[in-house]
Length: 360
Image (cartoon, rainbow, N blue to C red; front, top):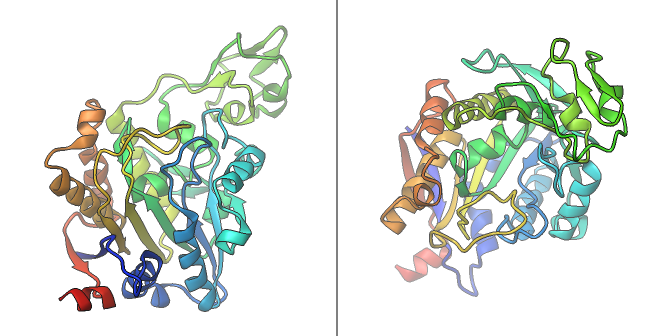
């Protein structure tokens, strides 16, 4: 049975939320997990521009300071998105991160986009899963010595909720890795969006694309690698038919296993401003659950299960199922447990702070 540490959002002049987070990180074992000299990837979601529900950078600064006090070398990271938005290439991604407050002056650490300028800087990691044999992970995540995964817990329109597994599995994948998870077929050309710039043809490893008035793909030669999707900045190359939501959930779990790759890791989840949709949207709808608290664990399966259980207890029904009836979050956790990522059985252990002692 795994341990999941917990603190609520109560605070006082003697113990504010940033101080409570510091206590939580220490109780959860951060000083023992991370070592001096390690390059520590703080994996998070910078939020799409226009979305205001993403994790506050003030919390991230606490983790950065704790790691730097140990002599570690933390950096903030996320991989580019598959869809064309404000985070689909490193230039836009860095600008979005900065506008959302993830700058050196606030967080005290550099921001490195995991899969590089166009989403092609990746490392293939063998995972030998049921659905994924080799996962394409953003290089900055794959090459880090250890991981601190900080997650805003919220709903998700395809897999029910976005927790630690989603943050690590989908969020660490390169653009081609995201295509691999989302699609069961080869990319499609959208002629009405194509500018005939020729970038997709220049970078196609199979020579399967020709450009006249717009790009054309020879599907006999196409490898389905997703390089054209990664390279196109106009949204003219898109994933093929989407995989089922259950298959996507299982692939996310297997990608999370590849991204973790046996390295030291700590997972921290914030059940706060629980929007029904992913932070990838350029907006956020009103919360569907109250602000509940902050969780920490070395087990990504246990922390996701605990977060979901706390939401269900607080709301009295499944708010994510109501928002997205087609999405079933249970499959993601069940498959992650089957492949050895963690346990759905856990002990929820509240931390004892000065505030708690005073109130008791």
